[in-house]
Image: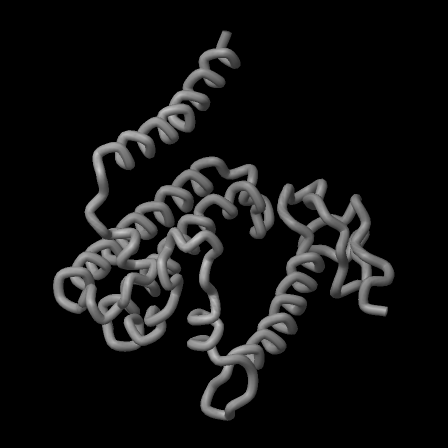
Length: 212
């Protein structure tokens, strides 16, 4: 019902010429005139996301006692092989008892989202005709990546404050945090460098091959 009679490919943006009556569509691709996403696709996307969030909001227990306990989910997750010790046991209490840990996680999440926004604003332009304005696209990309960089700096800073101020190794009982920050042997560090070297070299080699 809502997707019937979408805008035609000859629709003149801002006028009724070639305009349809659909408000929720799944056309895909870009509008041939504006070179941006179809507005009806964007409306459909946001409505679907809202529905998913409404359902997902009841998956985790809040003050009403409905849903799963995040603490139980974390502590039940013990990776096989025992390489991470007790897994996530004690991690929930560690986060709750450290405001710097909470702030670091929030800033890290926001920084990643901001960087993704910067990338998606030029790869999936939502604003009409913005794909044809390269200066605006470059400015928006730079703007959001700068913000992401500042936010991630804050995330690293508060993560460091957590390890200096709130980190208590004995209380965590060899969980995933203790396993990751424990002193490492030289052989382990060298083996990690060996794994990282191909990852650094492959893009450079690929770029050299493509340039020739």
